Length: 349
Ligand code: NAD
Ligand code: TYD
Image (cartoon, rainbow, N blue to C red; front, top):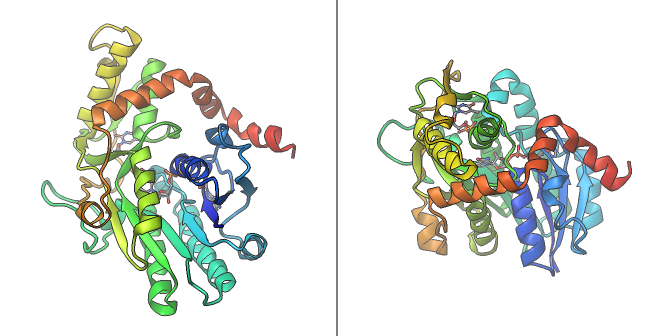
């Protein structure tokens, strides 16, 4: 019987990962540890919150004393570490919050696991979920490989790079059983509407401007979130200890082309006149230090573990828009801040 700790399970990717594990592995106990920052929303997990193998614990990954108690209580055999500050623009205005959570939080979690496992690493895994942004910014050509030297350029990516280094240091120094994956940009249901795709869906619905940084020429490599968590499941169970795996779907879009595709599909779905949403596109001042292009080579994951993405982008975007249209209340709660009352209603504190 495994008891697995998922950190940040109330966030975007963490909630998909938690749902997958709770449903797919009824013989695992899944503990979701989340601080419920602005990005953590328990409404993301309403459908599994009463499942017998699921427990939610509110807490902070930077609190080592709390983590020691948590590990002593549950004796986890695995950790899937998603908790982080994740939005580049917020890292530009408040870098210390990112260094605190992403660097100190990851180090504290490693330390608590190491103390609890106490050198007995059989059947134990500490899986650190990271981003392709640690590799820096590409020009028009080339890809990020697992061997690409780190070159982070935003406070967010620098804090994630630091955490990756600390995770690897535990492996090399203590033979601590780690795995790392670095994934490209995710999209899909339950994405907080501060990131490009859900922000634009929300703004199109409300006839508000669609802010495009700079000329909209920056390129991102988009992966449907359910494909990402399937890859994490594969690596967690079949990947090698000490290894890093890149995750991505070879799906590069300039921001402007992506937003135009969104506008096109939303016009069709909302029965609006062709071209009407595109009129909302508004070019705004570029992001400071805006990375030009990200592109992942995920050949290692394909060749060694057989993982492939399942969805084409146009299909994934269509599913995503349909989800937002069918879940107007979720979006309304998130944009009004009401979701933050859900915890006290659900847990009575
Ligand atoms: P998110 O911002 O949606 O969720 C982060 C979660 O972590 C939230 O639930 C938040 O409450 C929780 N959290 C924050 N600080 C905490 C703390 N101190 N203690 C406990 N919980 C805390 O982020 P996301 O987009 O789901 O990203 C999850 C992970 O995946 C991150 O590590 C991120 O770097 C990585 N990642 C994200 C993407 C992407 O496109 N979103 C791509 C690749 C990798
Ligand atoms: P984002 O969703 O913030 O992800 P990341 O910065 O981690 O890649 O942004 C995706 C791209 O969209 C990025 O190039 C910045 C751009 N962008 C805009 O043009 N306008 C916006 O309002 C936002 C949030 C992002």
